[in-house]
Picture 1 (cartoon, one colour):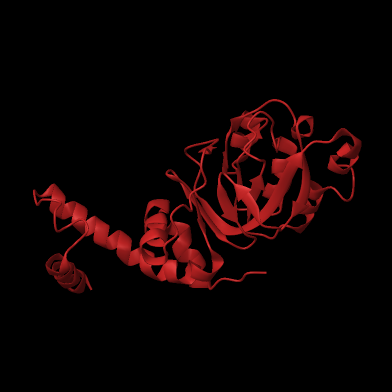
Picture 2 (tube, rainbow, N blue to C red; picture 1 turned 60 degrees about the vertical axis):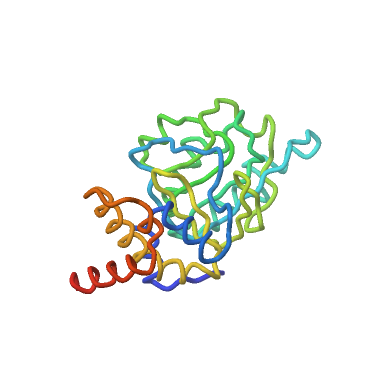
Length: 238
């Protein structure tokens, strides 16, 4: 199980997905680490962060459907409700199928009671009004009335998955905000946390310079002269 430094967790909980994905590209070469095609159920409650707990779906097959029944002790969704750790983010690979709902209000309540930080799915969700009222922040493809067993069945937990076109490994650090959902590979999370505060501060300084009439060229990205100006400004604030 991936463990993170307390300071890494606290910084990433406050960091923007824009800054994170920018750092992942420029510093580590990760071109696409934002989950595609998902949106928040409640835009006013879409901020969350934590290590990924993964759940994978496959297409339904009628002779195996009993294994997908939540009443079956071997059901992967049932195992998820029992094994997910406090502070985790449930990440669901529903094969991009937004025509069915992976969770409704009852299962969402069970994850809320477990202390889950948030949920991401590249499929649909049921009972979205009730879920929004519960206060569980969720990113998904959109509302869907039909239950997931009509098209899909949960097959496994805590394995590599694809969610919204992005590879997610158990323990990768997930950050969601109004811009979307970023997936940080576990082995670079500490470095991203160390860099992201300065990146956001620098961009705030650059924005203020542009607002005062300075041109973008040489400021965004900053050349060496403007980097020195930023360092002096930052030092004066300290």
